[in-house]
Length: 173
Image (cartoon, one colour):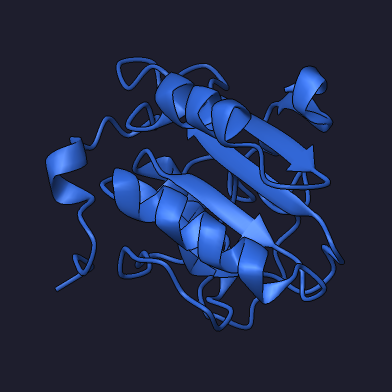
């Protein structure tokens, strides 16, 4: 990631507010949620995830963090990222869309970020284990770096949800 001009960090999510369940940290889509990274790479979220896809209009991050828990790699971009770059991001997303999500987010400026939340489903929520978040913040799109991130973390969420449930257009019933 560094060779591509990206910063990369592994950051533990903040524990659930009630100590037991991240799904209760955002009882509404307007609830205040504190995350250990921006954009979020794990932690508190709304009880229903977002419909899997690539969006040109921002999707509420409280939902997207739930997708991360299911094994998503999320592509985030700031409002100053050129449309031509967003087109390239969408093409990258479309190459292998299962377990992928794309959305703009305010506050990221002209940067692009990739996030993932990984963990061992057999240990999740046990003894303070909540998996780890991964975040790469990049000045530009670099296909090789983005492929490496996607291939390392996609489908490895702490809930252990199979990628077959993370297809474009799928969401909560």
